[in-house]
Length: 412
Image (cartoon, rainbow, N blue to C red):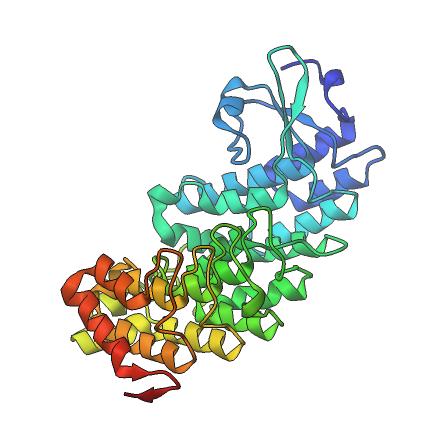
């Protein structure tokens, strides 16, 4: 490894002992090292390429072997290593769901910064280049890492295990950390709507766009969670003022377009039937409870009516929340298309599988004030657009339903 004196904020002996203690996850040794004079949790200490898993450093950096970590970087890297040991049964681990946030608090109390970069690497010219990932980035990546091999079940278990640590990290931001669209898709998709309340209590700012430029309400609609949509509206979000950065889509446009009717969030980890929870899994009592159906329930529906009821329950819940909260069914996007235009042309598989459900929601939009005769920038109404996209059979049924529903909420 390169000369440590060339590292930014080079490590003292106490800092090195802190890193060694973090490798063993020994809380007593960690606390002792933190009390040593000169220990700095923000200093960088070199790491051998085969020493541990570093999910927040790109592959090319890990393979080069020229990497150094801060104490928080070592914490995150060892957290992932120990989680993998637990999950695979390769080795026993001292890590616990309570111990991880405890250690994080100790590191933060001596000056650790959750917003600071976790690692640096040596470039070809010999200089050290500091990475961009911070602790929140690392926690997200730990949940995602190996997800393709372990599936959503593994990601849910990791998310549940890491939630207390995430709360400690969030609470350390003086002004509160922004938890944006990416976090809604990750933590909300895995843990359900109730993940928001503890985050807000810890100081998370959930009503702001993050660097993806996507509003949390749009993310919640895309996620398909009526519980999260309802929570955001109760926090004061106005759906009338929320637009996607690209295309000018409102939350209703997203709800009724090609993004519509994604599989609803599953409200449990799915291990109860087997009787053996995976390591770190939350007990059922601490998981979100919701009326939204599980994927299993959708797959085993005994009739078309059952499937319609199950498929559209969360969507109808979101629709009612948005309309009650002030969403405008007449609002247009950048191409002049209304909610009905998006709905008529949607290529959603769930919509195609259930024309009756599509019509029922269209009627609800009309009775809320949607304009069936509005013309977009291409000169099409929702009826003519639906006929063009969906064809005479399906599009024709949709057009007939719109004609049957007279303006003003009364049937013609």
